[in-house]
Amino acid sequence: MTTYATSALQQAPSTGGPPATPPRNVGGPPTRQAPRPRHAGIIAAATAFVVAAGAAVATATALASPVTPAQHTVNVVPPPPARYGDMEIAAAKQSACSAWDRSSRTIASVGKDRAALGENTGGSSNDTEEARAAEKRTVVSQIQFLRNEIAPATPPRIQSLIDDWIALQIDSMHSAVVRDWPASNAATDKGNDLVDVIVPACGLR
Image 1 (cartoon, rainbow, N blue to C red):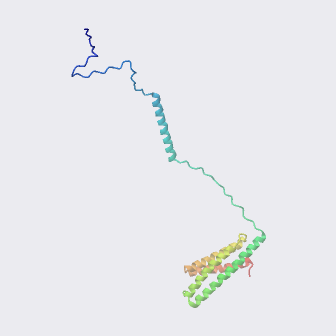
Image 2 (cartoon, rainbow, N blue to C red):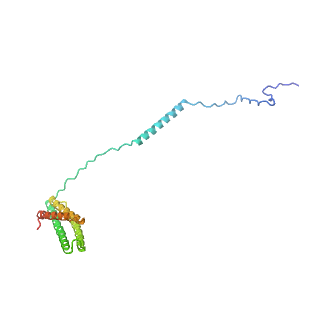
Image 3 (cartoon, rainbow, N blue to C red):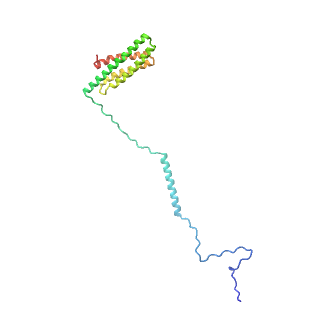
């Protein structure tokens, strides 16, 4: 009987020793190695980061310094003054003067009634106070009526005189409200003096 010798690789490991190293798979597929990092990829990533950082800085700068909108200058040319015919001017003068004549007479009438009542019952009586309140209402309503009757074609001089007279009526009434009788009487006297100017200017009486 022939005896074959067993190679060291095929011999069983000795009892109690370290385990044998597994044999290498000779002839099998090659072991895959980890790919090496490429320099081109690193450069591209760094470039993208720099671009993104630059965009963020530019955006922050734009938000911190907003752009001022352009200023546009608009030249407004006033329209030329209106022109009125002689008939329009004459009609406007007649209307304004007639309205003033009516208002001045009405205001003067209630003022005389209040003054007469004050002399008879006393300046602080209930009747006098009621008459004074009625006078104030009359002045307000007549001034509003008069202003509505002054047309744009009214001659400037007539309109100026009537405006001054209205202002004096308001001053007199205001002074009476605050019980500043000297100021109220002074405004009334100036208004009466202005009547002597308006009457001939309007051709009244």
